[in-house]
Length: 591
Ligand code: SF4
Ligand code: SF4
Image 1 (cartoon, rainbow, N blue to C red):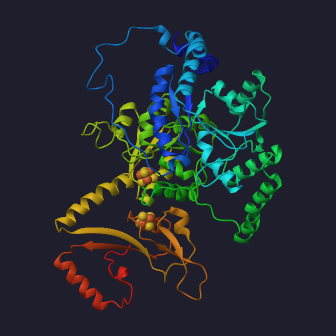
Image 2 (image 1 turned 90 degrees about the horizontal axis):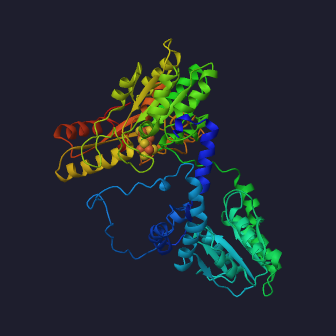
Image 3 (image 1 turned 180 degrees about the horizontal axis):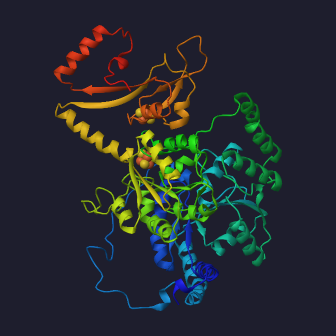
C-alpha cells in the first residue's frame, strides 16, 4: 500500500499504530559524569539486547555538571565505512515498520523486546538504589532529578552534603521501561513513596500505582499533589514537595514539624526580597554578538513601521531568537524548514502578504520541497526570507549542501540561488544582511509588489561565530609574522547620546549596554559599547537607517601599523584636545 494513497486519517492511524507497536527505551541519567558515561556505553548494549532504539535525555542540569570520569579506549565497530558489509541483509518484511507488520512488532515488543530490556537493565544495575535509615518511606525519582531531590533533602536536614540521604531513594536512570521486580523490591515494607517526575501526564506515578496494586503491595504512592502537576521542578519546588511529603507521612524518627518549619524558614525571605527588588528584567537568550541575522529583524521592524504589522511565520534555527525581546516577532513556529508551509496555511486569508523566515539549513532540510515547491505549485503569494549564514549554526556549525566547505574538504557545489531559479522562482533578491536600509527597502518592495507569486529574499551574511573563529586564527598568524592587523570596534559618544535607548530596542546586541550619564543634568543612563563588540557595523547601519542620534562612531584598532599610520596618528594626537579618550582618538572613519 503506497502512503500517497492514504487519507490524512489513515496516515494518522498508521502513525499511531507504528508508535504503539515499537519499543523505545528512554534513559534519563543522574547528573553525575561517571554515571552519564556508563549510561552512554550501556545504551548501545541495551539497544542490542532489546532490538530497540534507545534514547538518552540529558537535562540542562546534567549538561552543567562538572567532574571527572575515566575514559575507555575506542572500540572498532564490527562493520563501518572502512570495513564494509559484503551485501545487504536478507530481505525480511517483518523488519519494516509499516502496517500491517506493526501487529507483529507489537507482539514482539510485549513478548520479547520489553522483557529483554528489563532483564538487561536489572542485570547491569542501570537503575540505582540509595539506602537510608528511614526504611518505611522512600523516594522514586527520575535520574535527571536526583541531584535536585538530594539537595532538597540536604536543605531539610535529611541528607548530607555528599548525597547520603536518610530517605531511601530509587533512582530511575532508565525512565522507560520500568522494571517491576526492582519496583516491588524497593516498595515492599514501605508505608509510602514519593514519585518525583516532571511533566504531565504522570506516567511513572501511574505505572508505579498499577504495578503495586497488581502485586497487592499496599504502599501509598504520592507524587503530583505533593509536587506541582506541571512546570519545572526547581530547587524551591522540590524543597516544598519533599517537605510536604515528610509532613504527610510523618516518619517515626523525624520531627515533621521541625522539617516544615525549616522549609518555611528557608523560603520566608523570598516574598520580601522579591518585593524589595521589584520585577527583575528578563534576560532572554539572544543572537550572538555581531550575528548576521539580527540586522534582518531590525530591518523588518523598520519596514513594519511603514507598512504595518504582517503575519510572520518563523522557523527553527538561530533566527528563532527573534521570537524573544527586543524583536518579539513570529506568529507561528512549526518545525525545521516548515515556516513557508506554515505561512501557506494562513496566507490566502490575510489581507497583507505573509513573511516566512527560514535558515539555509532548514531550506535544505525541508523548506525547498514543503515550502518553495509547494508555494510554486499552489501559486502562493508570500514572502520568504532565507538566512544564508553558511552553516547549520544553531546546532554547532555543521556543514550543509551550500556551505563553502564540506566534511570531505571542498564545497558540495549546491547553491540556494541557483536552486531557486531552477525550480522557477522569478522574484529573487540577494541582500547583504548588515545593509539594514537596503534590507528594509527590499522587504517593503516584496510586500508591496504588484507581481504575484512567491518572493524570495536571500539574506546573506556568514555566521559570526564561524567568522570569528576563522578571522581570529588568521589574525593571530598575521601578528606572528609582524603583519598589519585591523580590528573594527564601535563606540558611543556619551556627550551626544540622548539616552532614549532606541538603538538597543532596534538591535538588541549584547555588546550594547548602559552606563550612568556623565552629564549631571541628565538622569537617564547613556548607551555604551563594551569590549565584546566585534565591529559588525550594525550600530552604524541602524543609526543611519532609523535616523537615530549621531552618537555612534567607528574605531579601527591597528596593530603593526604602517609608518604613514603612525605619523598620521601622532599628528592627530597633537591637534585634537582628546584628554583621556584614546579610543576616540583612534577613530579613523567616523560613522
Ligand atoms: S551561531 Fe551564528 S548564526 Fe547563530 S546566533 Fe550565533 S552568530 Fe548568529
Ligand atoms: S558594531 Fe554594534 S551591533 Fe555590531 S557587535 Fe558592535 S555593538 Fe554590537
